[in-house]
Length: 185
Image (tube, rainbow, N blue to C red; front, side):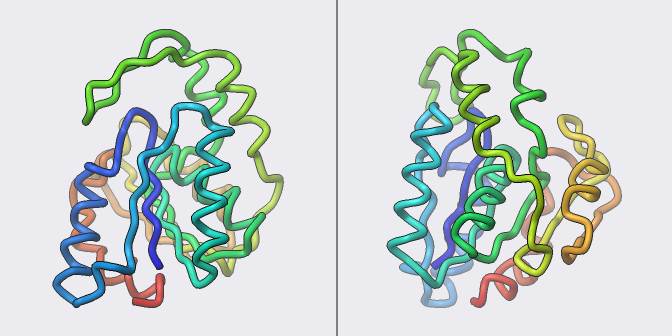
């Protein structure tokens, strides 16, 4: 099972999730993929994702941006393989300036992002990683995150550093076969 974990203010309707779904359907494996809509609360998102991973023991996660932070917590607490796409390394610092009213890019849903959310993110921090569990893909042109933070955090893991690009990983389809092979598909 592949579980795609979307980022902050994103949704299962992201272009990366859609590309994965299309490719798996083409391969006759569409049922081996899910991309849950995450609650705004990091604690609730972690609980939902933990249930999904426990329900599908042979799981590989694909975490994008904030989803990469959640995926790292799951990889270390549940022992699953994880693909990270421009992951947020310390989102509780990155998002501190985002406290207030937020709007989901895909659904238009509005909600309040609070200091409590930052505390919930901080509670999911892992101090060290098991490098063999990870495939890291980062773009040097990420306009939101400094890719070097991820390269340092995931030292020892398989890493693909792509020159240029953007935070949304607009050329993700070029790396889809690599991602799916790491995921066992």
